[in-house]
Image (tube, rainbow, N blue to C red):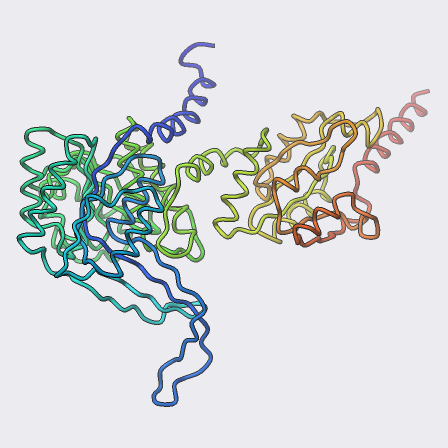
Amino acid sequence: MTASSPLKKYVQMKTMPVRYINSFKKFKILVIGDMIVDIYLSGSCSRLAPEGSFPVVDLHDKKVYLGGAGNVAANLKALGCTVVLCTAAGNDDGYREAAALLTEAGITIESIVADEQRTTLVKTRVSAPGQTLVRFDTGAAEELSAETESAVISKIRHAYAACDAVLIADYKKGVVTTGIIEELRRLNADHPKFIAVDAKDLNSFAVLKPSLIKPNYEEALKVLSLSAFCSDRAEALKKIGQEFYQATAAGIIALTLDSDGALFFKDGEFKYRSYAPKCNLPAVSGAGDTFISTCLLALLSGAGIAAAAELATAAAALAVNKTGTSICTQQELLTSIAAQEKDISSLALLKLYCSVYRCQGKRIVFTNGCFDILHSGHVSYLSRAKTLGDILIVGLNTDESVIRLKGESRPVNKLADRKEVLSALSCIDHIISFGKSGDDTPVSLIKHIEPSVFVKGGDYQNKILPEGAILKALGCEVVFLPYIPNQSTTKIIHKIEETAKWKTAILN
């Protein structure tokens, strides 16, 4: 096989993203920005207050997440790298909650300046089923005092030399001052670093000539003083690269367009567009933090713009499928890339996939069988099985297992062929083979998968299932789906044999 063969190129395309992700751990990133705490209060709402026409929410749950630069730091840490967070907060309950979350995430708080005269910014959202009703913001948004600014600059100077890159997360809440930007300019002039910026006002950072910026649609319009586009904003924005480059001096511009994906520019020239996967109920809070964190690490790892764009898009898609202000872990990203393959050979890998799916709130459906000669009954059965959840996993008996179950004349099609045919069905997400001497049941698979739904053919409805005990222990729903009448592999084989006998009789 030559170095330029299609097979080798295919293998390289599949392995390079994994190589980049695995190298994230080599880097140390300095994060500078606003400290924010996100609180989510949820409950039920079934009445209006007697003293006015406003809803009464009976609170049932409270969740606290890192927001702002804290969420950026948490994303970077979850993706595998070392993080130093330089910021300022009040010496209050909000800071203590943030400090606890940072410590839990494995991020030290020694570079955070606690200002007695400042209050930590806390955003509290109140929701009832189906919608957020209100958000309360408390805390400081004014610029740092001269004393606190000096203390933060001291922390930045101390951390800068040992870091591979700087990521600035400026939400216009007062921490990233002109003094801090000027200090970064001086440091970068002496010791150039990869500088990434995610900011409400990108014009302020042109003096840094950042390596990467991540404006969203509204921020892009603001930078160039443009009005909203009436149609096909992605195509329209592809043409503004040079103007954007002149305004920001950014080497790479990753312009995010939520459901329309992202546009990437290099020195003002349009290079690549990534497309966002569909998500029914996206929890977009923090998705931009995930996007720029992954993009930064991918570029540091040597990925080109296209590979970095796809990795960042994949990570953001994982984050928006979670609730609250979410992160994407290195393992989740690796799993997401690997999960594009249907054929799974490792039980450990299958278990990992399923743990990620459950974390995303997805309902896993499992079924199993020989699926020797695929026919319309099988296709209908598998299609209906997929409608019972989000992910359909098929356990496929090995050739040796089929022989033990069906006899020496089976299988007609070998395992590799059966996998290839099943992989062509869009309703199937993953296929894994099973069956060993003394145990041709899918019990071991079920233990690893922990499905929400187990599906069998209707002919098993009045039979004792060998996997029944584990299904009951897992609380798994069992659904019996009837095959299409008169459709089965055995009947097809019988018909072929009868036809062959008939032809032989005629010829004789």
